[in-house]
Each structure stands twice: as C-alpha cells, then as structure tokens.
Length: 78
View 1 (spheres, rainbow, N blue to C red):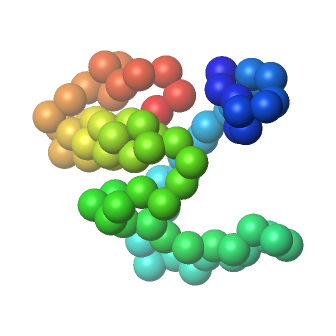
View 2: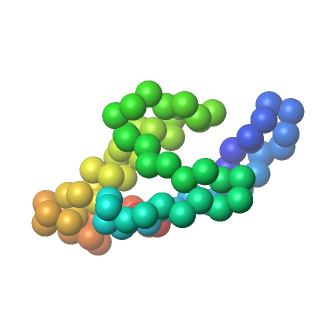
C-alpha cells in the first residue's frame, strides 16, 4: 500500500519480477520504455526505499540459485 502522490489516497501496488537471461532482448510497450537498471546505480524513482528491497530480493534469489538458501526460505512473491 502506498500513495503515488501526496494529494492522492493510498492504493494497492502490485510488484513482480521475472528472472530471464541477461542477454534477452527487452521489448518496450507503448509509452513504457524498456531498460535494464543496475542495482548499484543511484535510484532515480519516487520511492527511495524500493532499491534496497530490490537488492535484498536479488541477493536472496542468487543465494537460492547457488544453493546457499533453500527456495522455501524466499519471501512470498519472490
């Protein structure tokens, strides 16, 4: 739950991720440019707390892939 503008009411927000080969071609949608963002770059979005959450999720996914963390230990939606 978050508000996307100080004058707007709080609304539900749905986040998702897709794990694909980094060599995959990105296909933009109309009005939605496609770009890969590095997680070590400064965050240019409205919600500065999103970047640490994305880093944490990436770390947990990497750990699960390498066997350092069971997939069952991943948070829901990861």
